[in-house]
Image 1 (cartoon, chains in turn purple, yellow):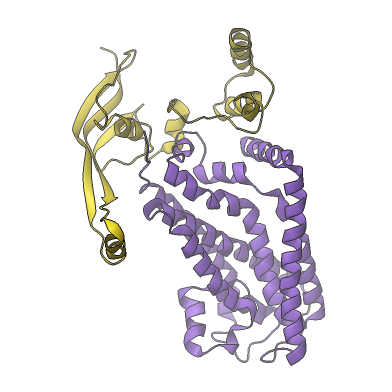
Image 2 (cartoon, one colour):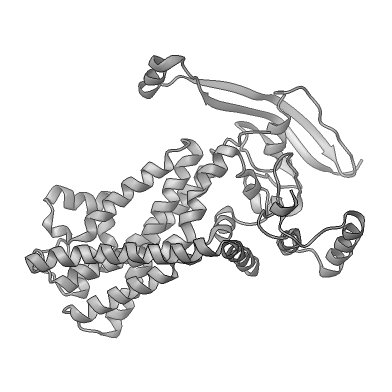
Amino acid sequence: MSLLLRLAYMNLRTQMEYRFNFWFLLTVKMMGYASGYAMIWLILNRFRGVDGWSIPEVMTLWALVQLSYTLAAPFFFHSMGKLEHHVVTGNFDHFLVQPLHPVANLIARNFSWTYSSQIILNAAVLFISLSQANMSWTVGRIAFLFLTILGGVAFQSFVFLFGAAMNFRWLHSGRSVSSNLRLMIDFTQYPLSIYPKGLQSFLTFVVPVGMINYYPCLYLFGRGNDAWFYPWLSWIAPTVAIGVGLLGLIFWQHGVNSYQSSGS
Amino acid sequence: MSNPIVQAEHLVKIYKTLEGRKGITGAIGNLFSQNYRYIKALNDVSFTIRSGEMVGFIGPNGAGKSTTIKILTGILVPTAGKVVVNQIEPYKERKQNAFLISVVFGQRTKLWWDLPCMESFELHRSMYRIPPSEYKKNVDEFTELLGLVWCPINNIN
């Protein structure tokens, strides 16, 4: 563990050698997220909510997605993004002949410190939205909320890991796989109940992005009337999301065995 | 006879590569049907290296030297056959294997480009759990021999 921290520290030192880039990224990323929220708020303000969900409730949905992304991205964005290059050049060899788990090694070397600002922003939006929404704060609900965030982080990690693992077998395919999965996640910007039944079941059972925010929020806001399998689908949602994350890791480890190691 | 350290039994490695077609029509054709070519890099390779032996492994380009080394180090998974190094199968227990071996590839550096090389050494010290006294002895020896410096690698060139 201390070894991994040491790698992450060396990586921070490396990033800080390029000071302008460091602060510039910090600011730009923050503005990107803020405009995303402004978009939803402006549109919803026009329609006074959607499908019976109030503005703060819909904002909660999106804040959960964004927060889980910004919590997963520091670990996986650069580590998995660079994997393609490592695989193409054969540099990935190094990660297989060092006495560390390659995922942990990649993460520590490529940990991104510039997400801190967005994490604060997203956490603030989530907190404000929840306090405005119709939710009664109980110990159980707060614990469930943390579990939900954890599930979201796991799901987002799955997208990174799954996409990157594709590169082992089919070079250059990772990015398109990840971005397609991200498009699925974009559906969760609004409550799934606004979509046709077919799409709803797809986003529940096939690519279960609803487990990140929609189903947990049904429970948090006590919206049982219009939902499927309420409440147990909501209760297991975080667990399902965590399971999906683990699946990503298994898939990644399996993918390593297809690595062809170019060059000599 | 001392005990075997490296044992390779009937190693086979087959690479699957895309058969490229010529020209733009070929490129379009590739999008719809792909012909794979199977290259047999290793065909039934067996050998044993015992403790204390010093072995050279030579052959012309494309003979399969790198492929063999990559299987021995756990980078590649053999298509068939079995390899045992230090009583373990490298690709099944990569981490454990990496602890016990070392490998240097030409043209590829293990050092961090943006930081002084001492930082890289420190890192490897904790990665391979080298005792501080032994580490210091080695660093001193090489500092005297080569004049190791405290500036980032990319400035040394």
